[in-house]
Image (cartoon, rainbow, N blue to C red; front, side, top):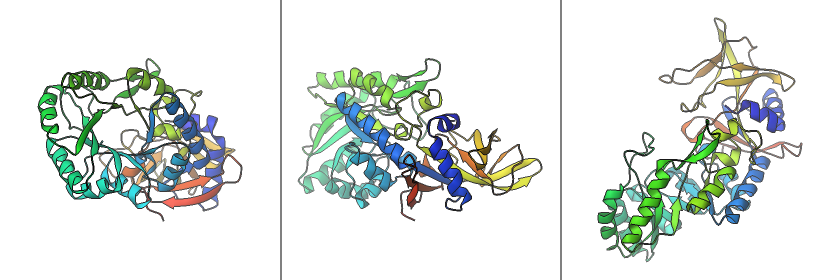
Length: 385
């Protein structure tokens, strides 16, 4: 998806991966992160967010909950991590990273709420009155007041399978009445997902119906004397969408793939502020009939690998198509309808979500300074290896 842009905009990353793999320093089925470029992207994003009065937050699921990179992003100006599930929150607590937001996209399990509230979190999203009651009760024991965001959803909105949950506009009045009785909760704001998506026909990031839903909910709450200050509008948050988020009333930047220059928009435009900073490396394993097979493990079925760069170096490689993979099977191997020698390097660049793969994650620093060094190797859930 991003292979052409990677070659054009970050050739040093491609060169480094070829060299290190051929030297035996990088194993197949690895995601390589260019730390210098990620830090550069982070500085640009954080500064523009601040210029537009947005709180600069970020997520780490797409890079495998990586604590080393997360610390670098915070040093670049971001204020905290948006933990999309409880495992990301646990990683942040282990590494003493500031948590900006939990509960969205995945609610925090009952037994973990006390630990997270005690650690400290800016915003806690709720999908149910029961979760609010639990937060309120635990916050009372800890003598804390917790800011919450209400997750919104409508059947006619944009909804991804596995992410259903939240409150409709019709349910808000009754919800507000219940929440007003909870002394340890502050109704700080609203959220929904996804709020922004790239439109390839318009060639720009545009608002989904969920943005209108948030704005309508804000008006409804005001009619009940609840004046929220936080409007969280995630998905496709990037340099080019920051102004739109701010102008429509959003208050958070929730950067994810923009930090690695791999939002869908980055596949079509070579002049965006963020530079591609992530790539996948594999290796030709064997042949069957006329196809060459390479090691799998990094498939994210929503955005499969369509192309790969195969060879021994940047000067001795070929860009080829990758055979369509059967999504009902385990990705032990993927294949290309071309012959390459066993051991050849395979580089791909696609919109992965590392935390749902079994790929190893390598963080390499000083690639752009022509002195590349591997500074960390991690599991897809951020554990040091």
